[in-house]
Length: 407
Image (cartoon, rainbow, N blue to C red; front, side, top):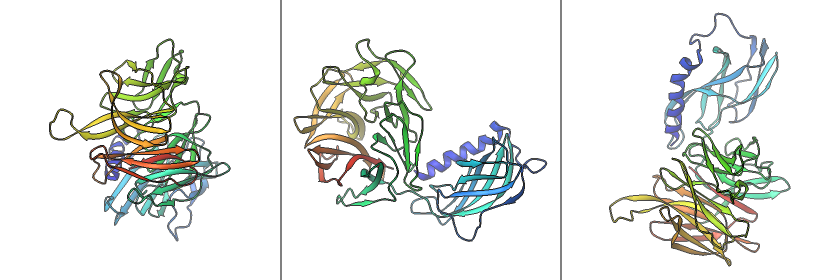
């Protein structure tokens, strides 16, 4: 997983000099002079804010990293490098540039490069400590006024342990994590995307106005929101899409839960209708949509699972489903994409579903569906294995508001 992410970065680096017109050997003269790098006595923590001073920095300057590591971390590549990694610039004046040390790599030696309109100048080198994130099941726990604490859950025992420091964000919904990113992304009450880095523990609010998030492609978080015309639902990401809802429906009816990819061409969401009922929503990546029959439910949250093939052939298939909650009970039901309706019940769980995620085993298959359910002030975490039908149940941490699987 990590290796795939690095290879993707490397592939981009191969193209970067050509696409951007970079001078591989640097400009004929220095871009800045009198460069003073931060002290290199000890490795810096991933995400630490560092400052390089000098003369001649320009308003559009960017920072580029060339990262080299040896003796890797866990299953990560034992030796390797990543080039073409742009850093996050936090401050820039004529006399200095401040940026965040790179995260999500093993302990590394990092070349810090100034990038200006295709020209590059190596400013110096720093050392950065190990910053590979830990995959697993995480809960977001409201830990105080305006703060959120990520908590790591042991799927085998239910043991919960705070992970890192509380971050200054309020409740988030539609929480997802792009595969390999080590970042939790959710929407706040204003529809702003807030990204919480599990390595640097920094929240990064972005633009607002979104209704839901989804990992349509494993390595990317897609945003869903309003289009320019009434009734238009748009998906923003590397592959943008637009759908037109029937005239009787509005985009604001979209439920605030992650949109899931149930097949190669089908996305699942849900709508809350004006009469209080809810309806499945199919979004085709090839065009068109379908609204399923309305059901009386307190919650209708889409999920995807991996199960035995329904045609009796060997192997597995990906399928979509919904967690339907009514009368204090949650039913996990398969979804029939042909009929556009809910099918067989896979499991019956106590409580009303509040959040739902999936977490694959170490080998990537199959995925376990994890739910956070509420029953008054009591909250419970349930894990469901679509292959064997097993259910795992344990108490959720106090204040738990969302679950997310991190690969």
